Amino acid sequence: MSINVAIQGVQGSFHHKVAQTYFDESVHVQECSSFPDLVEALISNTATDAVMAIENSIAGAILPNYALLDEHNLHIAGEFYLDVQHNLMALPAQSIADIREVWSHPMALLQCRSFFKAYPHIKLVEDTDTAGVARQIQEEGLKGIGAIASETAAQIYELDILAPKIQTIKDNATRFFILGNKRKDLTGQVDKASVRFTTDHKRGSLATILNVMSDCKLNLTKIQSMPIIETPWKYAFFVDVTFDVYKDYEKAKKVLDIMATDFKVLGEYKNQKV
Image (tube, rainbow, N blue to C red; front, side, top):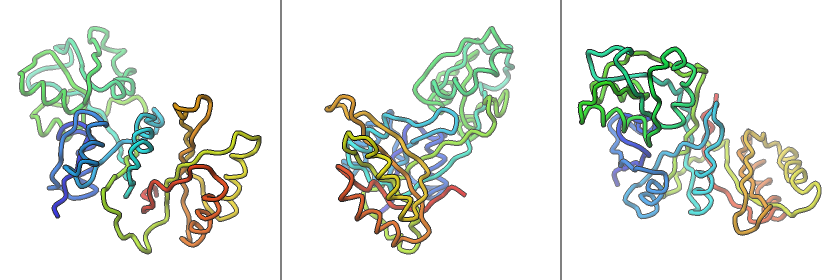
C-alpha cells in the first residue's frame, strides 16, 4: 500500500517539510485546512499517516492537538524535531519598503514581532497557514503583501526572500508527532513512549505515579496536563518517557495500569531528540 501523508496546510509548509524528511522527498501529501480535518483524513483511511505539530520550543504545547489525540485514540508512530526558520517573502522586484501588509499564521507573527518594530508602516495580518499565504500571493499576484514562511515555500511559489531568519529567538524548533493507522514493528528501536492517565484526587497521587516511573528507570521528558471537560477541575496527564531497557518500561506499564486511572499508551517509538 502506498503512503499518503495528511499534513496541516499546503505544500511548502513546515508540515510538508517534515513529511518529506521523515518519509521521502517524493512522498504524496494530502493537504488539510485544519488539524481536525487532518485527523478525519487519518481515521477515514483517506490517509495512511499524518504529521501533527505538538509543541514549539518558544510557544509551548499545542493543547488542542493533545485533545485530538485523546478524543480519537490516535496512534503515535514516531516524532520529528524541525528547526523552524521564518523568512519574509514577496513577489519579485519589491523591497521591504514596498510591503504594506504581512500575512501569516498567528504563531509565526508572534515569533517574528520584534523584527517588524523597525518597520512600523507594515501591518501584521493573521492567516491560517504560512505556506498558504505564499501560494495566495503568487496565484493572485498580490503586490505590496508579504508572507512569513519557509524557504521551501519561497522556492515552490517563486517568491523572493526579502529577509531571512527573522524570528526573534534563533533557536526555534517544533516537535511533530507522526501518526499512523497501523502499528509498525520497531523491535529493538523503541526507547520512548507517550502515555496518558488520570489520578485520584488525593494528596500525593501524581507524585506516587511519577515515583513509579523513576523506580522503573524511566526518564520523564514531558508532562502536560489537560482539563477533562466532562469533569470540572479534574485533569488528565500526558507524559513522555525515555528508557534504555524496554523491559523496564514494560514493568512500569504493568504497575501504572493498576495504579493510575484510564491509563493508555498513545505510542511507543524511537527517540529523535539527540
